[in-house]
Image 1 (cartoon, one colour):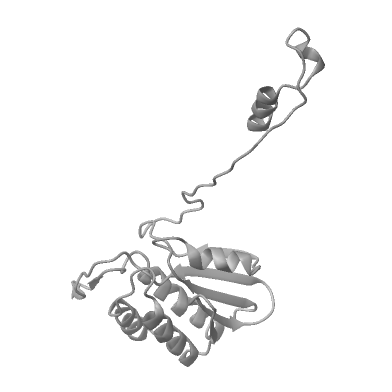
Image 2: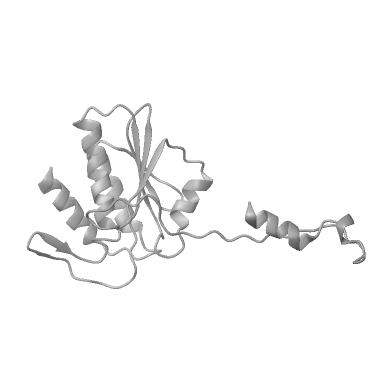
Length: 192
């Protein structure tokens, strides 16, 4: 399995796939995952989704196949692989593909594993956003982002942007206790 995993990873790393140009790597992934026994599909925006096993629990493994632009030549030195995307995040993606396959075939795992290789994570997060709108459901989710070889990251940086408009009835300044104040309501919302 180790030799197969290294070959799979080096083949992934050999395909140039900057954000927005993932078609070649998507086709490669779909073909290879199918050979490994996955049920595989490519959705309408280019995400590759493979399924092994059936039933519960459902485990969702998600990685991205795109990289930032630029080329770093593939080289192997002292049993370490160097190339664009080796760490972020073709390495974790290859590990998840191989691990799910092994879990389904060799360990007797009872349940379903969904492996999603998403597009444009380095640019717009379009791939994972699309999966969310499609209502993907799982009992557990693991995202293959680099956190170091000795770490498991339970939470990850992110952001949420909101625009909140608070409207209250207007009143006279001489009797502020008779009316709700929009600013105070805003503080209450923030405090909650």
